[in-house]
Image (cartoon, rainbow, N blue to C red; front, side, top):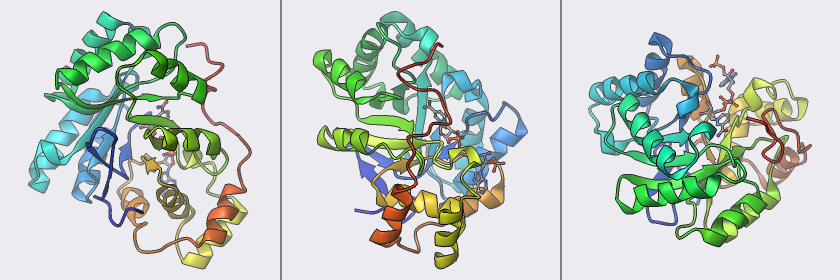
Length: 281
Ligand SMILES: NC(=O)c1ccc[n+]([C@@H]2O[C@H](COP(=O)([O-])OP(=O)(O)OC[C@H]3O[C@@H](n4cnc5c(N)ncnc54)[C@H](OP(=O)(O)O)[C@@H]3O)[C@@H](O)[C@H]2O)c1
């Protein structure tokens, strides 16, 4: 089912519901711009925010959430908040401690989703056990991974008691990840797109511009709609109110099968971010 509105949710394999659409806050530093962006998103109907310990902005995200929900007259339970354990904290005890630290900074009692940020060899299984403990203790609603390739998922699932509910990966028209998406579908793992707009670098693409003109939409809206029609959760980042609004206006049109394919054909297996099989951090 394609999302019908900004608050529509996908059901994860444990029954928890996650919004199809959310706000990313990578590279947004602590300060008024960050707090304002989170509040603005909530004001305009966003119900999901994606941060990470390494972004160094969990305090401002927490403040934006508190102020945003108060102004919108909604409660914490209406929001879906994601954070991620950083590589230096991968390990059983260190991941448990990192979760506490993230909660404290965010000023929250629980997270909706906690992810292993990168598949550091030899470390992610101990971290996963910690996430399983947090989940079984009811301290987090859902657990998952990020930047996991098929072989990382296979390796993790060999020993895991609980399958990841989400895999958040780089995903955009230049990196369409078809095999990974099929694998995740087979295993009930929800795929989530990071850098869906390729960090702004796709906005001048002529094919996308032609499609945008046809639907009287922006290139960003075409890409984000393509995510949703592919069954991929998406979390575009913007700190500008007009773009926060624009990005979410993707529920009033539908891309044809042909246009979906034209966008898929832009795939070049090209990454703007690090390669999960070859990173050194
Ligand atoms: N798990 C991971 O390893 C990982 C890695 C990277 C990112 N992420 C997550 O994914 C989120 C999104 O990815 P991202 O921040 O890397 O990149 P992105 O969402 O693909 O692109 C963000 C860039 O596009 C601009 N932009 C946004 N909407 C626009 C629009 N409608 N028209 C023109 N420009 C627009 C933004 O600028 P303005 O702010 O100036 O509007 C910003 O420069 C992150 O914020 C983070 O939460 C996760």
